[in-house]
Length: 422
Image 1: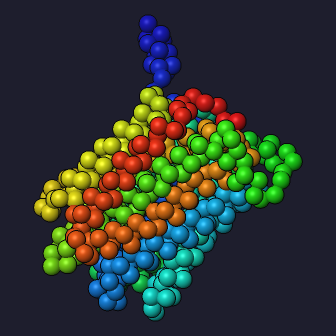
Image 2 (image 1 turned 180 degrees about the vertical axis):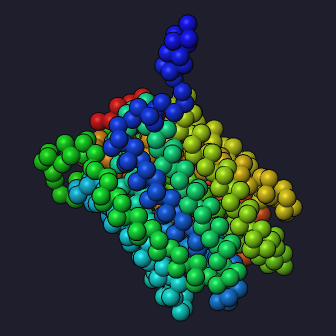
Image 3 (image 1 turned 135 degrees about the horizontal axis):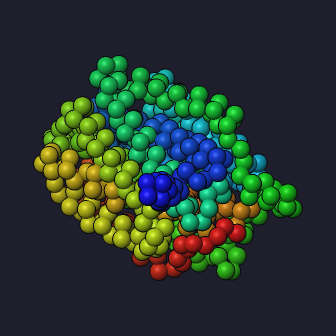
């Protein structure tokens, strides 16, 4: 009886079987893409975390600070489009390594900026690498994991953004009061060393290797292909949906640290640097759970149903958050807003991977994601300007409205759960 009992316990499925039974190359691809996205978040969000110090230290307005955030997103859009083509033509791993090196080097360079023009140039170059990493990593993970576990794997990858943001908040909380905002940016060089491991340990997906042997057209072929008659409406709907979500996310998240840090006479809550960092870290816990839960739930209930639910709840919570000024209530609401207001991103890579075939997959993902970034590039400036003129409450509520618009786009986007990669 004991042997039978032991056998039944050994064969009983667990929540981690999907990871244990995955091929080693799939696990290495997921780890590499996750670390790349985590370090991308770490470098990019350092700006948001030192934004209040830049506003006060350099004497810039909220509008100018918003413009700096916007041009970074525009550069990220260009980087995503370029690296999407590079990933399709020359490989997911090569594109991943190149994008990480670019954003690491120019994050550190921000610490040397002597004026707004220099800082803007470094942020533009940083944005090119930032935009390229997601398209490369998402394609790498999509093509190495089976259909039934793709949502989970991409959920883990996407959740690493929250880990990177939390690490950035931790670094800012420790370094900013000690050495100032320049030193915070210098820490951003660390991701460059990560590329050495990727180059040694991670191989190109077999699916991409097979597609690489097929005849290829020019670099614009992928962009023409995603607008063919059977894909045109879907491509437009996905791009519009992502534009709205990115507008809402960046309009809210880039300004939350400044909102928490700025004194009340400048429209903020007036938290100390340590309290602001702790609040942002708590939000990242909710964000991480949102990413991971979406991956598991979408594998069970479907991509569309979960996406719309998360977006509507995110809008409602952001409307409420915009009208709260009590510090402890903001701390309590933060993880909930982050859970629903970010978790849906897991589904974007999954849906686009299941709609577009291998030869154009990274191009399509890069296009839909980064054209969205072009639209969202207005968010830091728009929200900053509204906060300057009408206060953060109205500014955050405007960002939340974009979530409702994103949910409406799902009328034209099909359910792709269980669809094998073409």
